[in-house]
Length: 239
Image (tube, rainbow, N blue to C red):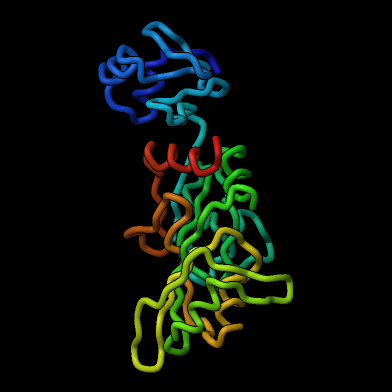
């Protein structure tokens, strides 16, 4: 990729107009590969590390970062001849991204999709403990004792699973809802935990991955992450 003026790369990355980007540089708020930038600097967006106020900024135009609301019944895969419905059915044909982690076929909610392999690997690696938050509708009214067990740790067949946070958030008749925050991602872990404490899952939605929230995205909809959201993902991934 050819080098380009730093202010142009910043403007294209969504940091404001070119003039506003020049002001950031003049104020000493921009670094390139750890060094304070000056007007006239040029960058190779595919190689150089650019940061504003100490927070990394993605300036490579080839990198994409999407939030997608995976509907229930959709398999978390881009290409699988055995999957009845995969992710490609919901994305434009010219978008080349892959999912960061997985959601079970019958679980819905937030998926991050990107072609930034370094970031994706960090977000998925257990070492970095990136939080995932879930809202579970369950077949019983949760008691404080059951919720406390989720926080204390539940013995599963593949080891103890522990919620970073858990709380009951609602009740309708004999049913209820629980919010859980997890820092790992074993297969069907949330469902198995809730089942183990006597709260079989009726519906499960992931509402947050690290700093990115599902918000008002409807099932099947995708949106580009903002520059701020991408920078926040870099931070939680230790980049």
